[in-house]
Length: 424
Image (cartoon, rainbow, N blue to C red; front, side, top):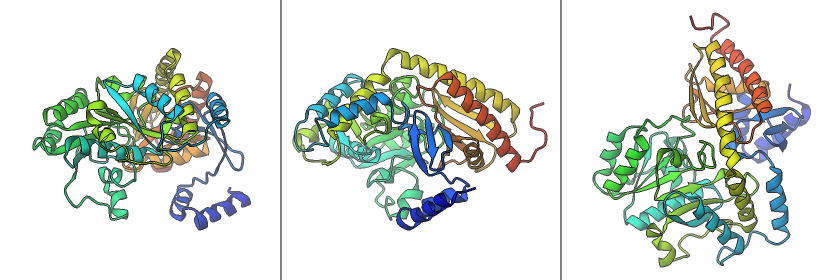
């Protein structure tokens, strides 16, 4: 039952913020208005607690309002502010050096944005400048954000709305896990770059087949294109390695970072590029300007994020959480084999697959009722995005799994009915 205060607030959201999105969640029986947040928990304005396994796309990898990050931000604010994007800055350069030190291959220069989509635009512009070509290849059902170039790489749902469809044949999409289609797109040698999420998030985390990503990298080298790794959702230890590409032996030409880079404390994103492909930084250093990009307070926070994430014990924690949660999900799946039909996983990157074209939506609703927040995959709503935090405790994982068990059973009953459910 929605309280009177919340109902009034939701009406104000429709009037002054975003009527379509606000109404959408109400239609899904999700009346969430986030108030307090702490660790891996969200608190509704009415006081209900939710375990957060959406994490805003991995933004809250280290938990909401991580105490170490808050302390660094508070200290930084005593000396710095956002800064001036035109001039060298202590924190901005220090973060760029720190990023370079943990990059695969020879990625050296950090070019800052404020959000992931802006960093995608920077990466695409950098590839075009480096190769003197315009065409960009992405995958079918890709999602790389909503800004000018980024939106053209993704699903038409978002580009058509603002008349941003590609009409010049410069943005090509090929099916995921299809090397023949990728080679067909590249073999004319007129492509500047292939852009790939290491594991496509908004598409429901389909896993790359063995050899696929290294095969794409070899094709880009053969046909003189660059490989842009979008690590906005798969970086920062979520796969059990610092970057998802590490798990596949990929050394990209450009890598894009965002979301978890500052733990949700201050918005910063980055495109990181090798020296041989960063010519525009010398040719015209004013080629891309971002007033908020590389904000100095955020840079201080980001350095702490990188330090925490690379602590030796964190990789072990991710492996433990991934194995523990997977074992629990396997037990739940065994109870509902006609409904809960698949688990896509690499580390704590998880997609739960259900036997209905929009099966993840009722699961999301029942998880919400049972105190868990996870979200369906926009471009494949059969699949629930399920993203445990990398510092979760065993007790939190146990609590999560108990609630997931109930919610998946309730969703199955709603959609299929209450008949026999066990295999055999």
